[in-house]
Length: 459
Image (tube, rainbow, N blue to C red; front, side):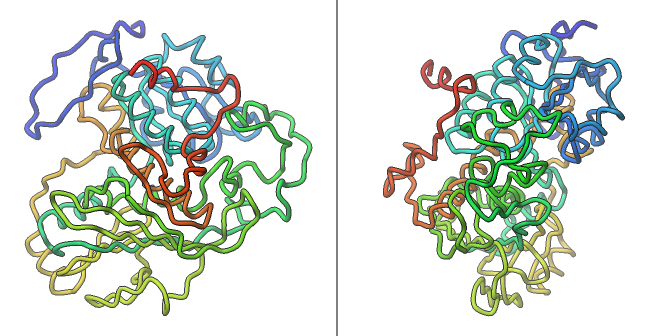
């Protein structure tokens, strides 16, 4: 069966009244029984094995792309037969876009946006790992692109597809813990100098020989040219603000998911960095404390969200001291929503719902709220694939939701990076009290890597 010639099928009414996604401009939807043609942009390591093992290997894998042949060698040995391999996703999409239905983007954070938008522009469905983008303008542009190109989208904060997060959201909506005014979230990382976060002695870091098999200029993508440094790869680029956004973006996209969904949090109007460990310019700190101020909406009052990363003295900070919980890390939970009747806690990936005090939890267990949110079978990749095939509803972490979540996270990253208070005009999309920081709301891109301007110029 030729790609782009799938038979259109009528959307049938479902008991859950699920909303099905629209399909790309000029393209019909696929048959539920057909296999999708999928390409990987970023094909190395565990981050690519995740989509492969969780649904994509059951479809047609038609192309692979990666700038680092050594990093993806093992996966290619196990997966690749006759499929073409590319170093440059732009070349792959130019040559094969008519044969590709969907792509999974598993690149470093700074190239998420160009790879994702380049696919969307060609009517290709996209699954992009978290965080969705490297800056706020990019997140807003991908939301605009979703509305324009009408492809099926999903960000890879996999906890959003679990039953646990649904139980937490349903419990909050049912009033189990009452009105929430405060949230505590934390992560013990980053482990500077460990497996995922570099800790160079100088900035810029010392130059290293470019490894054979690495297309360094393509790895840089939209980022400014610079010398290769051995500890950028394979994972430690996360410590450099030019490429990643530290532990807040790496894990906040998981840990903030429950309160953002349950409380329907829109971007805050103020974010403050209360404390920050010193670091070299351009390098993330080993720890920080961030305070978000979310305005009230029609359903609830204002909410304050406290974020902690790195080692903390919980006897002094992150104190909850209500309903049996003493601090933000109580019971090993990564997030606590504090209501006037009790608490809801969850782990780093928005799972393992915990309710306090004990008597409230027992009542919740005896008479749990009605399951008002449809459950996902098979995880986030299967959720995305089913939506493309029109056998399931639009994915929960589609770009309408995940672009907002990403914007919230990245505002905290900016406050942390510059150790300051940020006053945010969400309607205008700009920082009002430090206008010089708007240069980081929309970062410059190298020539040949500019994407998204036409969407804004053409409305």
